[in-house]
Image 1 (cartoon, rainbow, N blue to C red):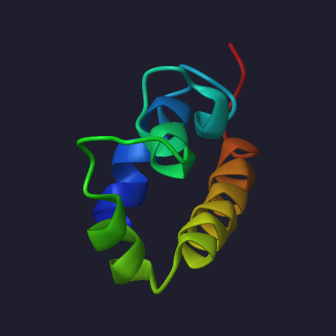
Image 2 (image 1 turned 180 degrees about the vertical axis):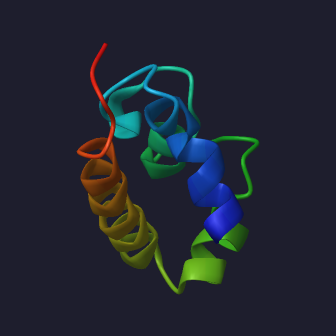
Length: 75
């Protein structure tokens, strides 16, 4: 679960974007679309317990990322 979050949030963690949920080159949004995909959506949602818990997990850890960002010194 943590690895999936790491993969999705990496652009935000490295300050490429401010919100990984809107970053166009991450699979996070693709998991949430109700369209056919080669992504293992059911298996991934099963790890989290449900689609909703997948979203909640990402929301919770995103909040932690936002708090971490407060520690960065702006150039």
